Image (cartoon, rainbow, N blue to C red; front, top):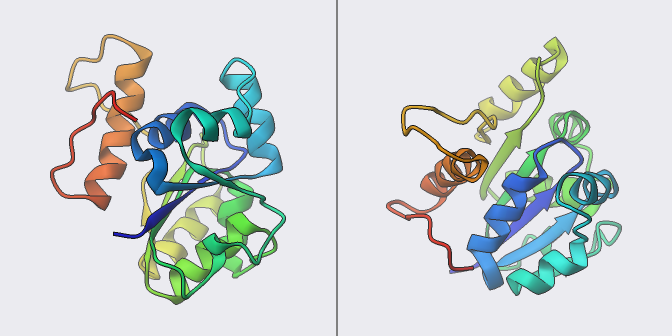
Length: 182
């Protein structure tokens, strides 16, 4: 099995990406955009990309390095997950713009026919966001807005986060259960 590229962009909802990184652990190659770094620090009590990578045993790649392994068509990468996916990142992907490692990894996933999952976390969506999501979906990208369900009777914020993260994992690995192991 190859690695998973996990991009955390600047949309609100960094906790979804953090939880996914905890579960993927050493199988994740983390790419965090500049806006993602700011949102991560703001929403996750000062957490830095470096500290997250250390805690999870993940490899952290520099978002400015478009030649990194995460953007290689010949690397053993199984999937790219952009969680959360900002409107800016969404727009760049829909326009085919790979100007940083985050967007380049997504573009390479599409060209190599790898699984690409994006998790938009905006509300409400502008028409341009909806059009870009439809465009990407038409190209085979899995669009999974961070919309937690309530039929599982969540009791904590973590339950809501785990609901969305488990849906992402369901699209990546059939039958995978969430665990507290990372």
